[in-house]
Image 1 (spheres, rainbow, N blue to C red):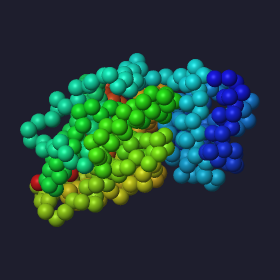
Image 2 (cartoon, rainbow, N blue to C red):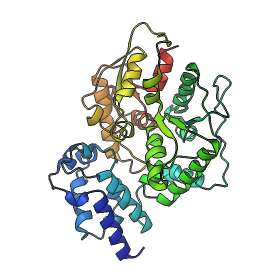
Image 3 (cartoon, rainbow, N blue to C red):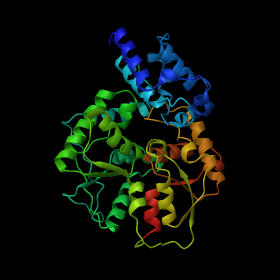
Image 4 (cartoon, one colour):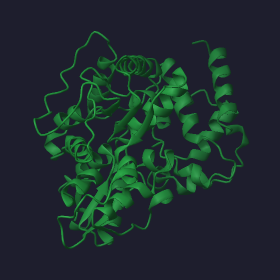
Length: 385
């Protein structure tokens, strides 16, 4: 990509995201979780570097990938700047010009996603299904499993079982008389590749999945992952136009459809605090759904100091730039959870579960950072029959 083309692209990005309207008030930096622990990072200064275009090092600077894209800054921005949208767009330009962030886990997860963008690859994705889970080969309701089977294998040492939320989702759907469809050849939704700047690989994955959905006649997609929900609905439409199906995270669906025919199996309410995932909360606006599901399932919900729109991210985005800053964010969040007196920290995002459990593996952490972590759907499945 020529330098002049790069400049034109960035100018378009600045216009589309309203970045040139920055008031230089610094509210974004004041609330940014990364800026609070890493004083070398500032959303305000990143905007300044992008808008002035006098800093040729921006596209090569690893700090470009430090943003968690959590949208907490946008909650405070008086100019309504789409800061995370700007980060996504500039990362795409940076990737095309040789820039690159620091991938966690030796880039293994990103490599896996790129491999899945090859249409000739036939992954084995159905081994986790058992006789107790009822699915249908003709249903128009798809349960999108995403990367859950790979996460469980990759993070086995963390005692992570992301597939539990998938299995419990199907059990609850079966309890409601729904047999969802599972597609053997679905691929990663592409979320992490898109947000790390690898837009071409993302579009290959999206095109594969969209054609698969079309051939299967899918009208509704459910998922246990907020990132999948945002990507399948919003990001696919942004790249390819109207998608022809509705998407809901499982907690959104349960909130609307859990009836009185469910009975509680626990006499004393389970005391739970809830971690709002960024994609489910600030991206989809679904703050009440998980809390409603937990209360319906006979759980007492106690709030952390930072909750709902003010909730703090789990500290790592897109499997990139996992640093001491990330660990500090996670430790602070785990302490907040413990301070509520809750028995369990509930979340509705597999990555939140993985990142918090990884942080708690640190033997240097005190007891004030340790708490049991479960998915909202799994809690509902345990507390209701």
